[in-house]
Structures are given as structure tokens and as C-alpha cells.
Length: 413
Image 1 (tube, rainbow, N blue to C red):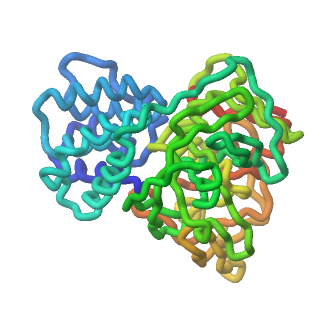
Image 2 (image 1 turned 45 degrees about the vertical axis):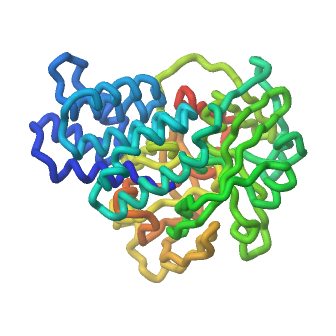
């Protein structure tokens, strides 16, 4: 699903100019820097503007406090405010209800915008209608539920990161991918599991920038003693998930499943513990919709990067290329890099770094041969990320744990 909500934030830039402090808060929001926004929001008060209340709701959403965000957003909608804020509020409310697996209320949140053809921007309206098709297909589906033993579950992963599951009662091998906004399956995988495929006109964006038409399916996943009911899958033709080198991806479990399972610890021997308990600490991850965002420190600057366990290698984006031009002084080192995805293969100019050192979750990372994109591969409103953190940055540690409920990344040893 395209990041429609990100585009909506641009509407407020043209609205009435807020006060200086409020203006700074909006700048942090539009830059997607929820870590900064969280630290600068004023204390709640009865006379705060609807705009500040929206920023409070957006911050709650970004740190997984979905019910708090929903209550604040419904409070905003109960009062009179400007139409542009209404678009933003309804868009975020749609996402937050969807984050709680409540698809019908999510649809109801944006229906007034569709009836009135708001927003006026054609691209934003296309995104809203796409979300509505997705939610309409799922309106009768119950919330996702995790059932099973409360004790940590130990699972063994293969060299490819996949592990044994039961999908609709049928054996399959899938893996976790924090970079996938939704779980997905190849059509043959869904059919082998006996899942009903719901045809739809839903489109999703791919890493190559093109949109891909998908169907939907709903099924149950069993991982050892754990069962996850009403898992929503995007279903793609097998050809879309077959790479030019012949590699075939049968499917992956994305953000909605991973976030429901709590802390997951990954060991160097390939084992994985689901449901491990840690001492409660402040989040060092945030959410941009279903995108997991981490802070990376480079040259004493804090950069926003996506945490993507579905990527083998870390890559730095065009934003990083623009921020640190001294690293790219030799133009002869640039080369075309092929990016493969469900929408095909795209070539992008890139620059290889011999090595790079940075900090992630307060731990030093050293990588070699890392690629830096010289051109953006995302829409302008999403061009705030400096990098995509892959498994190469995590595997050097004895173990690491990711908790998308508590929004915490821990690196050990």
C-alpha cells in the first residue's frame, strides 16, 4: 500500500501558519522524526489546538500506542476544525484501526473523504481508494489473534532464514521480514495451503518503484505451539516472486505478524526464541505506518533508517549521498546496480564504500563494500530515510532481539 498518509502531511504546509513552536513540531512531523517530536511535545492541556492534538496522536501511533492514538483522533473528529486536518486525522485513524486489525472501522474512517472526493489531489485520492478496496475485501474478517503457550518458543531457522510452519494446516517454510508492511504469499503457496484467494484491485508499491496488483487471502499460521489466526496475506503470481536468477520466494511473514509476537531473539546458531522477556526500556525504534524506523549515528549525526530483516545487505540511500558528498569524491567508482523485486528489475547509479562505521542501538557497526544509491528510489514524501539496515549489520553480533510491541532493538555480544 502506498504511503498515502505521508503525502497528506504536505496539505498542512499550505494551511494557516501556526505559531513558532507549533511550526517546529510540524517540521519534525513532516520529517518523520518521531523521536524528536516525542521529546518536544508540550504537556497535555485542555486548551491545546487540534493540530497539537493530532501531533500527539501521530506520536502515540509511531510508538505503538494505538488505542491512545485512536482516542485522540476520535476526539479531534468530534470537534470543528479545518478540512485539511480532517483529511490527516481520518487517514491516520484508518491506519490505527487497521493496526488493531479492525478493518470495518478503518474503512468507516475514510468513507467521508471518498464520498466528498477529498483530498483534491488526484494521487492522494487514488491512494485512499486503494486502501478502501483493501479494507472492503476484509470488512468481514475478524481481528488477528495469537493463541498458545506463554513461554518462550525455540524455533530453528535454515540458512535462508526460513523455518517450519503450518499454513492452513499444511506444511510450509516461511521467514520473518520486518521490511514487509504485510505478510505475502506466492499464489501456488496459497493454493497448496487451501486458502481462499480473494480477488481485488489492490495495488502495492515495490522496491523498484512500480505498483503491483495483488489478491488477498486470510489464513491461520502455526509456529510450534503458537497459532496466529486471521492472518492477512497479499497474494502475488508466482512469476512476480521469481527472480531473474531463478530464486523463488514462496512467501514471508511481515510486520502485522511480527509485531503481534512481541520480542523475538535471533541467535548466531540459527535458533530463534519467540516470546522472550526483557527489562522494560524506552523505545529505540519507531513506526512510520508499518515501516520500522531506527536511529543510526554517523559522524555524530542521527539518521533515520529502516530496519529490514528481509534484506541481506545494508544499503544507504540518496539522502545519505547528499548529506556526505566528501565520501563520493571519485566519480569513476560509480556503477549501475540492479535492484530486483516483484515489479521487475531496475538499474540505479550507485557508489560502493570500501568500509563504513556507524552506531545502531548504541552499538558500533563496521561494514565493508556497502552500496550507496546516488538516485532516490522512493516518492519525494518518503525520501527521509538515510539507509536500509539489513542482516549484515545484525549478524556480527552473538545475538539480537527485535520487539515490535515494545519497539526495542537489542544487540548482544
